[in-house]
Image (cartoon, rainbow, N blue to C red; front, top):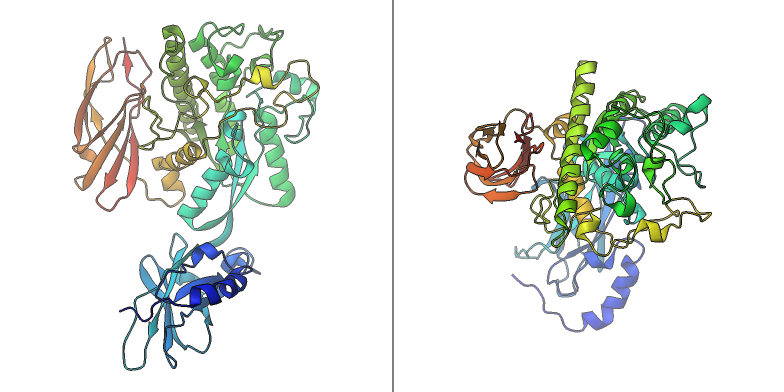
Length: 539
């Protein structure tokens, strides 16, 4: 039932309400058109239930909630408030209405907080005589259920660093933020990635030369191995254990002129061989053929010979023996109208580098006798959709005309650092970056490590993994279970298809390697990802 009709209060009380909430909560949380009590603030310690505690020693969440009472509520009424977690009330109470704003306190023991840390607070009026209003607009908040910080280290080049994205919207930040939301834990990001860094720049390590720090400035850039060295030193000095390393590198060391692997940089004409050299550490030449190129290029710093497997193993050797997520942000196809030869090279570049990452992670796991590393993919298809989203292909200059050319933004003979100390890309696709972060964390191994519940095992089968060009491969997702309402197929060649049934087929024209992945959505809306354990190679 509606208890009152708005009359003079909007003009008379709104300024006072704004003043009352200015220091305690955003006005956006209150709705001046509501007929019901409004939660206008929920105050907790700055660190939630972790304030003043050490490790996991804490007693729970303590705080207050302020409820605005509209003028139409009669005198001698009560306000009934509640706090919900997982859709169920975990705290509630009744307080007398004695002013426009009623403030009540609450205590929630740690073991009663929901696993995801998400809480919802709302209230309603109880009128003398038994009448009860509806619940007003809620206040949503998230607290950390586990007070042990989840430490994430991010290393790599401009791709990991987030070329063109605001500082708090980098991939490391978004991935760490998303991981914290999924685990209900406090998160700490330690970002050492640098735009323009190579995977392995041997000049930095010759004669035990000191690695430059990531934030040192100037023209000397730390490579990924230097970044990992700095990350390990700081973790030991500050006494924390690293839980996860976000790792990238090598794919920008191949032929980054204009950001397009067109084969102009010496040593990059054979793209597959270049990927194996830079990402796999195989066949590095004693004299770098790109050392004297007339434009800034990570490839003139690279060609070190230590590949991604060595970097993965060095990451796992950080304090805490962290898990390692090797992130391949490149996917999809070139923009319409791009010359056919460049399109083919781009496609080869994407798939070959993804396979190099997967192979490096598998070999590192085999050598260690445990599964601590995984190669993740953003699931961007050539239709521009990221796991079902409409975001643009990120870091693909062929698909985004707003990208500024590095060559023009960073003059090769200037005194500035090669990356100019700032992002030189003109278009910041934050939503695309956020979709990458969410998709990386769909990886079944990552979900197993951090409490997401898998899934592990085979979610689908294929009729063949090899064949001549044009071969059709049949896919069957029956192993994923029966309570599935949607199947999103990513065939590994840039093609993407959504089906309502578990069976489909796809014809492969390019040789590959093509690693298919499947994202299923069950009847509750939960999304899970599966991938084939080996790529499909055609031709």
